[in-house]
Structures are given as structure tokens and as C-alpha cells.
Length: 258
Image 1: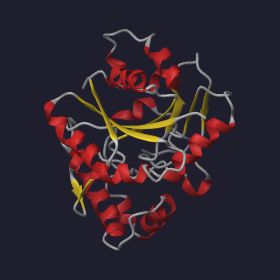
Image 2: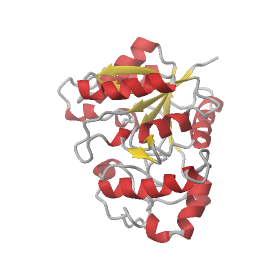
Image 3: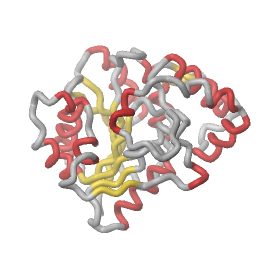
């Protein structure tokens, strides 16, 4: 049976909001909230935090140990190299790629993407719900065999500035068979940002996550999130106008106004 490994890319040295992954919401580090959500996946066998060798990231390694998951440390700037080194070192068969600025990773959506990949029985090299703006930003899940990323990395020059990114070397390469999974109508919210890249993002996320945690509801999915934000449109709009560095890599659906 194929072993499924989910990695969460996280570091303290974010340029726009340093230390964001360990900023606390309702008394808990944001990264811990994400780890605990990913651990609820039924199809993920192993969760690994992929951080850097920078001493500032010792705290991330300590949090991984505290939550009982593995931590792999590699290059800060060459994120592609960090993840491919992890894949080699841990013998990753099927890789689920997640980002540490998305604390609301939904285990049900993670399992859906893994399930689509596995049921296709080799028809795809890459399955993702994140190459086009469809689901709310922050719900991205990329699934592909570790061997596919190793192949893609072997074709990228050591000095290529795009090595700070990972899945685009598959998602933007016609060499690979790729499937984009679009959000169903009830989850189609391309103008909603459930990620943390700026102070305003963190303010929005603090209020949103705090609402559930402070009411003793640690396990809540995207449906519950959308219901709450529909009742609180001002909160949903709080970070809507923040600039996003990833816009250059996303296909925008018709009618998108971001």
C-alpha cells in the first residue's frame, strides 16, 4: 500500500510577517493548529514539518517534537531543494504538499485530493485544487508522487530563482499529467483569503479561529467556516484587498475581481 506523507513548509523568516507561524491564536501557535487539523486526515500516514537550518527555526522543530510529528530541516531559500532532500531522506512515496501560512487546512479536502489521485491509479502525475482560484485561498492541497518532484527538480538549474517555489515545477510543466480539481459551487469562493501573510490576515484569522476555539469547537471544516463568514461579511472582507505574491502563478476564473 502506498505510504502518504504530508509536509508543511514553515519558517520564522517570513519577509512580510516574521514569525507568523508561531504567532498565537486563542493561546495556541498557528502552526500547531494546522498540524492538529492535518493529523485528522484519514489517508495521511505521516506528517512532517519542513523547516530550515536557520537557528530561528529551532522553535519550529521544538513544536514539531511537542506535537509528535517529524521535522526535516534544509535550505531556507532553496525550498525546492529542501523538499526534494526530504523526499529522498524519508523515502516519500506519495507527497501531499501544504504551506504553513494556511492554518485552516481541511482534513476532509486533503483526503478528497488524495482519494482522487489514488482512484485514478496512475492516470495523473499531479492532482491539485490550487492551480486556479476556485476554493478559498488557504485550502490548497497538491498531491503527487515523490518521484515526480525529484524528476522535476533535476531539470531546474541550481541558480534558478524559482527554486523558492515547489509545485510550480510540476503544475506549470506540460511534461506531467496534471488534474485541476475545481471547487463545488458551495465552496467556490475565489475572493476569500484564509491564509496569513500580513498583519491584517492574522487579525482576520485570529477572529475566525478564535470564534470556534473559544466555543469549544476545535474541529470545524470549510462548510462551517463559510457559514460563519456569510453571517459576518465584514470579517470576510477584512483582508480582501491585501496584495498576494502568488497571483502571478494562479489562473483567475472568469469574473474574478481580486
